[in-house]
Image (cartoon, rainbow, N blue to C red; front, side, top):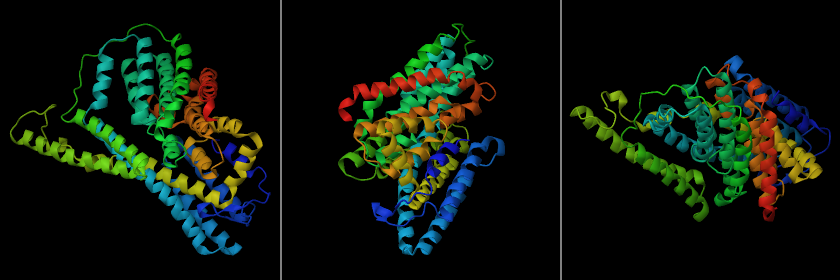
Length: 472
């Protein structure tokens, strides 16, 4: 089970006294880790995460169990505080602190998702897919192209979106060639996760580290070469097992709609705005992203006017707009954000935050970082992220806030990002592709190549420690 390793670490030494961390880093000498409500909180979190794991079988959206668990964990915490004689405002302040962290993440991702959905509506990704498929490349060349594009697109478009796009290309090229589809999907997952590891925009974990201020925007690029090795080594080995035959070329061509290139430019300007807010104004990046969303808001108004006139005067605009339903609407793009994922993050952040208030994360921090040392602990974090989702793992590390150098923070960012590539269930990209290529790209198909992927994982860690030794 994905949650069992984490629970074992949390419960390791559960009877030992520990200080419960209060809001803002204050500590109170109250032991809550071995209380009945503390154990209930851990059990509830474990149960919720088991339901998340079996989402495909139960068809219960992953946000629902973690949101319920989050609510009850904080109920348990508030009752525990009352029993321990801790002022009620401590629990109030603590949950507000966690909700503030979630709000920043929510607004940031909402703006980014809206841009991605807008580019999707303007046929940006479909045009790329059509171009790749229509060229008649060999399977081996498509293997390299899709893996490379996964690596270079994911730093901007996030690893999940990138994996879905490249997976669609692979399935369009040779859906009946199971060996090619499986290898190409593994390559895409590794490439997307590796590409997302060296950019604050590439993965939720890197975004969390950046927003928390543990590394500046430009410092993530120290991870570029290690991330490249993480993808390149497995890709090189797997490519020898991909045939050189050519699939049947497609004749249909998809064109981008009116305004597509300008939306891409506005997205780039939005990223620049968010970085500037953080680096030069000491304001949250989420505020910059929301300002950037207003750029799209005004441009969407311009698109709407042009497309209405196109219908009124029967003038084709880019791809012909023939119906009011085809007209671009920004708020439809907002509505199509992945709300299940956004609400899942709410549940995860409040669950982990509640367990932190009980004192469990302080216990884990002592067991791992004090007992094993930062380097070994950070490598273990990466291995755990292949089993437990990397978002709660990274949020737990950020909440524990162990005293580490920049090199170590970058190491844990790298391992948490690329460790999920070891198994198909270890990352959102892998889970998404198991749905896209159902029955072909499976847990077992990925597991056969896990030793090869592990070579890339080990190489990336060694490369980071060697190249960036001055940061440790």
